[in-house]
Image (tube, rainbow, N blue to C red; front, side, top):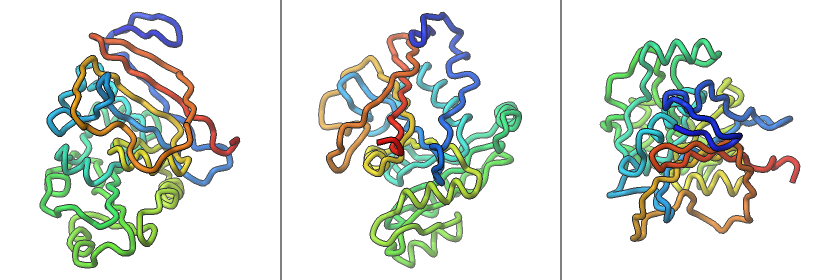
Length: 256
């Protein structure tokens, strides 16, 4: 592993993002901060054979764990949960202890965004055994979600409603902030990323650029309405076996 920015430095692979501290909530804001964490091919694809797992190598895997270990909550869209067959976050004893030493809960809170409550209550996310300290997932939905679907999910998870016709993501982040979930990691998918960016709700972007070309019509890391260009400031670059781990900060929306 080599760090290229800020300044060249050879590192052990285990040291990538060691002691990572995600951006704090914006000054005077009443919302949690948001970091996007994604992997993409050189030509911009975020999936290979339907999942992201085939894109990332060992460097990306280590970065993924570091990001999860540095956040208070994980925000993810229902489509990504289904495609990647999400289970509960893992919290083995050593990682839980490290998080607690850093002032975090033993495991991050998982929040799944689905405006129509379109999740299967028998999915692995809800039925798999959780490590000690891992809280039940929170399903984030809208008030127009079908009542029967909401009731079914309420039997296996906490259900929280924000917004009428679509999930109000700003309200979700205020809710997180109020509950001490100050740093949120968003793991996609592209539509959720796009909605957060459109709302000026993203503070950092972590992207692993995988050394592969995919072609086809795979999605990019952001999908949705046309965005005004979002300026990014490069703060870190690591390289391992051809993978580039890129960390960017966005401009502070409060100063625009």
